[in-house]
Amino acid sequence: MDDKCIMEGLLLDAKSVCDLYMHGAIESSTQQVRQTFSAAFDDALSMGDSLYQQMTAKGWYQTDTAPEQKVQQTRQKFNPTC
Image (cartoon, rainbow, N blue to C red):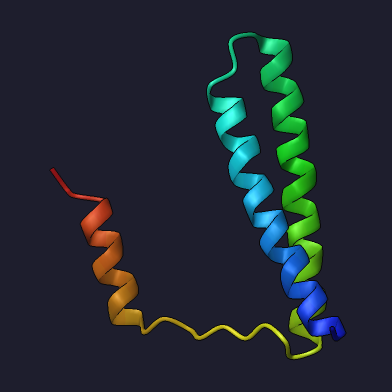
């Protein structure tokens, strides 16, 4: 297994953990539990960002820029004027 595969796996794990922590925070029954999940969520987001930055620097994670027309259509769809 090469470094790219390892980092892809770590990033996928970080994304999965973020989902779990987010739902844990949303559904927490006490403030202390919510704060614990929120702190873990923030840590997982930071780890995911670090992995993303490293992968991008190595050319292992490439993204495409959305066409401006699509961006505007999406903004209009989710930000109605009424």
